[in-house]
Image 1 (cartoon, rainbow, N blue to C red):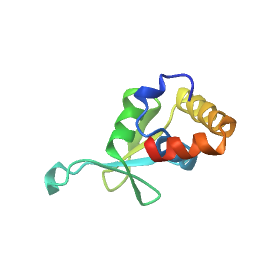
Image 2: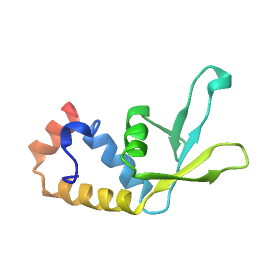
Image 3: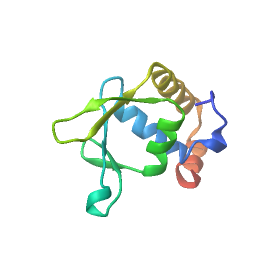
Length: 108
């Protein structure tokens, strides 16, 4: 995660957790919801991905739209730069001590 200024990454611990769960092959599903009054939602393995994390990953070019499912959800997978970002983030996290990890988890 050293490739970008850390102040721009929303909730670094949660963002890294989303990237870890995605791995190299699991997609995030973007569910358009303008018609139902809820707005767009993003899910990974049935769990909601916070909108600010999904939007950050999309704007940074770490996610690519790989098409629609039969139910109209958009499938978003990691790009090559997204995979590099994930690998760098995992290495960064491993380099931190316990108190640093705790601080980042609590304070973002």
